[in-house]
Every structure is written in structure tokens, then in C-alpha cells.
Amino acid sequence: MKSERPPRLRFGLVCLGALIVGGIALALWWHAPGKSKAGPLEGKLIVFVRPPQQGVQSVPIEEQGALPARAGGIMSLQAQLEQPAFVYFVWLDAEGQALPLYPWNTTSLEVKDIHQPPPVRIAAKIVDSPLLGGGWKFGTQAGKETVLLLARRTALPESIKLAELLQPLLPTMPGERPDEVVMLGWDAGAKSVTTILAKNRGEESEAKVANEDLVALVKRLAEHFELVRAVRFVNAGE
View 1 (cartoon, rainbow, N blue to C red):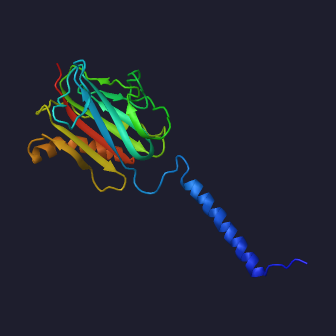
View 2 (cartoon, rainbow, N blue to C red):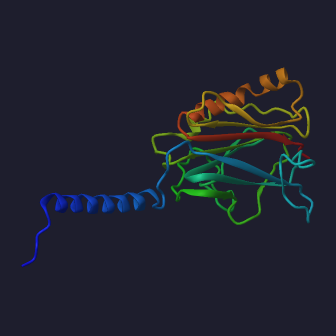
View 3 (tube, rainbow, N blue to C red):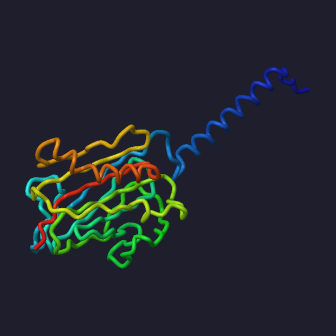
């Protein structure tokens, strides 16, 4: 006759088995694709520019000699995030237009109305705009170009109208220094907008005043996105 295990031993084995199964299930859930881990959404924006001359490579805007941008030249954008997220790129050009880039447009600028709701694409850690190389061409109007990176771990609801968040649009203005550039950032949980990059901006007091409209825009967008990056640089025009 088989000997039966004591009740306490049987109970202990059942509990141990439940813990093992539960631990495996938790591990699979935690590492599943699309599972967002705790902590703020971290990432960065890289803006590449290239002059209109053929055979010249695109370079990041912070590199020496990259700016000013020029009419007929192009820019390309890349978002690098620590976790998958839904990314939105918007271009506020020197002519005062708000142009939707990604996810509205992937390889060419077909949708130009920022009032159009963005299509839903998969969350990603790296997003290039445009997707297949090339770039977005600068216009002939001299002034300041502004690019926005907006990211969140859930798709933007239809109830949130991005066009309304962008109002009032940034005023068109000339660039006092052709190679000036500034990048502002906001991350979920931050107490204020921070300056990530600032080059050739002149006196600190002047730069602060010049940034007021951009800071206000970032604050409005921060209410609906977990990560905001805004970079402004000069287009020398024709």
C-alpha cells in the first residue's frame, strides 16, 4: 500500500507549484512585446540637415557647419525612445504653416492639413521621418524652422485635436544668427521645460525672451504627451 504524504506537505507542494506557475506567467507578461515598463518615457530627437548641393551628406544640426538650413536643402528626423511609443512629428515652418509629418506622411508630403486626424500605426522605439531616406525640403522663405517630437505610450485619442493644441502658431521671425539652434524638452513628471541644446543664442536674457513662445507651446503639448521635444533653427532662405 502506498503511503500518503502528510496534509501539510501536500499543501506546501501545492503552494510551491502555484508560486512557480504564477512567477512564470508574471515573467512572460512583463517581457511581452508592447508591455510598457515602469518609469518615464525617455528618448531623444535627432534632426539631420543637408544643403541643396548634390553629393553632400546630411549631418545633425548641432554639428559645426550644419546650419543655417537653405532653400532647397532637406531635413530628416529620427526619434529614439527607450520604450515603444506612438510618435508624432510636426513641422512649423518659416512660412508659418503647421505641417503634419509622421504618421500622416511617411515618404512624401501628401497630407498638409494638420486638422486631419493622424492614422494609428504601431508603437515603436525608433521612428524615421521620412521612412525611406530622402528628406523634407526647405522652402524659400528665410526665418526660423521648428520641429516637434511628441510621444506617448497610447495612441492619441480622436477627442484630442492636435491643431487646437498648436494654437496660437509660433510667429514667423528672422534668425538673428544663422547658426543658432535651441532644443527644449519636457518629460512626464518634470516640473518645468528644460533646455537640452542651445548654441549661438547670444545673451542669456535675450535667448530667454526669444524662447517664451516656444516654452508656452511645449507646456500646452505636455498636458497630452509623455515626451515633448521642440527644436528651432534658422533657414537662410534663398
